[in-house]
Image 1 (cartoon, helix red, strand yellow):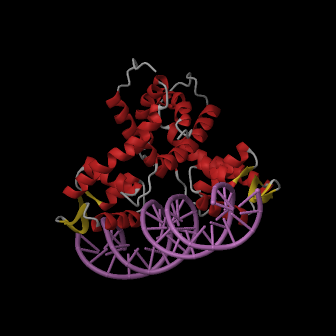
Image 2 (cartoon, each protein chain N blue to C red):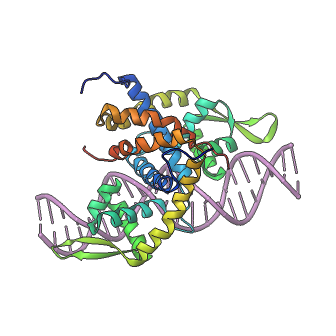
Length: 149
Length: 149
DNA sequence: TATTGTTATACTCTATAACTATA
DNA sequence: TATAGTTATAGAGTATAACAATA
């Protein structure tokens, strides 16, 4: 808790400003159009369902930081493509359980490599030290995702 | 060029996959709705115009990694709000020069602090070491934005 | 003919508000 | 009455294709 580190309060605000901008801009550069494949939020939702197993819509919306209506539409789109299966929750008929279909798992494997390749190509332009700094920062960036509000 | 560092090819692919996901998810969490203020891409474009001075639409689109039609619409929205000024390029009547208006500069100052505060709040939950790792990685993340294709 | 920018069209992502069904 | 999810509505961000004006 003692503030002896190199990150002072003004630096922290600057850090926040730079991080905010770089995340928005990286997002736009990493993005791929959904015409030939799966749009970004749909893909992110698929990954979450794959990683965290059968889950409710509300839980998925929370994890992806979108509203319930947004996630409802995303799931409708994924459902129409046969990539997820929505089944009524046996314990609570108001809710649905969302699971990845076999087609969803296959699609994930197929698309994921293309997206990742884009980022890998950009990473390939950096030097080893830069890549190591990003790797070292990743756990902290992932920690930023945790919602505690 | 010699590959002696700790980041091997498989690690690099993994790094790319994690970075891609964390950027997409951070983007959604950092985002603020544009109803009360300036939407994300509009704000990002304002920042770029402020930092890099008068510029052409095509140059702005390239820097923000969006298509020309997308940037054209963003500029129309910013123009309607009086935040930028589009003037014909005196050297090439096909082009426009985009500059920040006084109102645009004022808006930038006002809005920027709100957005940044969101990120700063999340950064505040991390410990000093995590924040330092992010700070150390920022130049590398910014280097990822450079287009060399 | 090539380039710059805009308009046309269509789709994704986003939210809040209103609604339905169930608890 | 409260909660889970969907539908209605509206706006931002996104692209490709077609177009206009200029080089």
